[in-house]
Length: 115
Length: 115
Image (cartoon, rainbow over all chains, first blue to last red; front, side, top):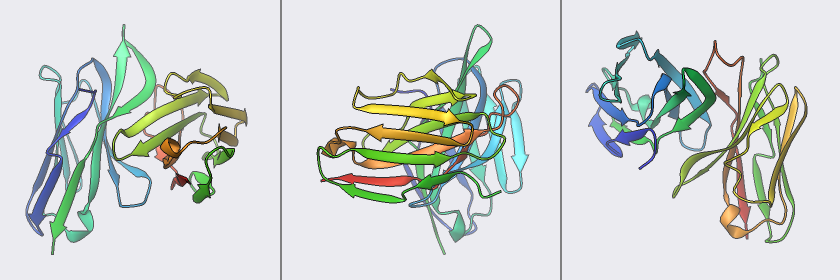
């Protein structure tokens, strides 16, 4: 399996509910990022969490990072139909303390929010 | 800023033809990335440049693929000859500066169909 795997692959919820997506990775990282992709569009950066951070908030987004378990979660609170999109985690891997300078993306979670 | 600009947005060609995809990164960004996205393989990094110099081309699938960045404001990805399995959405992304800002800004993508 590859670096940055999201779970679940697909998530379907009702408007107003919370959506939680998980990401696991394998190597040491400098930071982990979450991106969103609307159908037929490019990816848009949502939030970045550094390896020495455990939790970060941005609006309705909450990201956690557990480097001991090599996992992260993205929580979207009070979801809206407009949140319907694919969500990807991406890891900035390091070796010997130096970033490779590139991101490795997971396969993504398809989120559908029903009005 | 207009964001990352890619052209064409859609390309339909026949097997064996040469295809050239173009990208204009955000002004002031010094890293540029080419990705390919398919349902089967997800989002794959093909090559990336720092300060117009190719740093990692390990993702380029084979010699039929080549990429150039003649200056800070323009890059091309060329496929010659094209094959049906090259059909995918190709994204270009740019980044302000490695080490401090790791967020990548994606273009809208070029949807390539090789018949």
